[in-house]
Length: 510
Image (cartoon, rainbow, N blue to C red; front, side, top):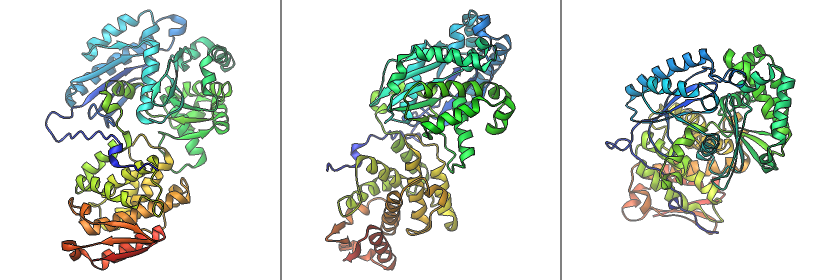
């Protein structure tokens, strides 16, 4: 098996502490239903949103029948954009990506609105074509799910963009006029008629054939609320929408149920605004028909879409190839650990238990192991009695992308065992998201971390000179020369714990 090392992964290590290295960047998204401002901490592979606000302006309401943007929606949008301008000034955003989608693209008064919107915002607004909107939505999914393989679907108020993605590449997509606001206008609010319009559009969309036995990646605020409803109904323990996955048969049942709900029922089930509640049954129906008329294997939710896709597409090619999870966990190491350089050494030190006698080190598991190393010291500032629970909560709820729920639970359990004890009883709800293999591996890494920190005191320079080897059924730690002084009861105890986790006998040689 090919040996994997940290150098096999690209990590975006931009450091905002250096002058001029990282500046806030804003994306203003003028959609058919909402107008939103998101300010990110910079142009990098795993940007963190530092401000996020939306206004449900309803610009596209009535466009399908009247041909013009809603007068009330225009007023609400202009007020929001005026506010957004001041917020961007206050936060020092010099780089702004302002874009408008289906409503402004299709309405007869769209150009006049864009002129007024640009004056209010103080920036040029790019009206996306349907092809551009589809491509950026798919880029957003890839930004957060580099291994995505299937078809992305971004549902806005006026349109649905469908784009195949495979092996990190975006294929040619289509735009369909199936947004909930448009369907509401065309159907006169009749669900049966709306379903007929949707089914007719899907019958003439060959792209659905590319969904056969593959995943459908759902993007958009309306569909994210379906994930929340399903989580609540099933008692799912991890309220993180990104990468939340529902099998096909459950997704069909969920969307069928929500499509039959009244707005009042939706507001109670999803805790959404009245404006959102009016369109969610239609959004559910669109998804139900898409799943039913295709061979999609499952439904996967993405919190990243057009806005993140714009940032991703504008990154240098080298940064786009950086790993989003490792870039984000490096940020955690830099912000929360005593020495981020030590965590890099810990990554290399952990390679020493990668062989048939130790733990499996495929590319997937090596990536998670390195992410765990980056997170190994994030709880040190907490009270000793709360380090385990604090680190566990921080990782399980962190705003990471590039990671599914199984892997997130694994990382959370690893830091929990690192602070609480290698053989501590894990939180049952999160432990249920993984298998025994992941729990065993989490214990092994936690044991490795506890041993490493007892030797290095979290400072760089020590671990590279301390051999740790698996030999003939033993785990051998060598403390020679000046390192012999590091031997002691704590080291012996933690070496024994790591050996037990590996099913080996720990031997200390000085």
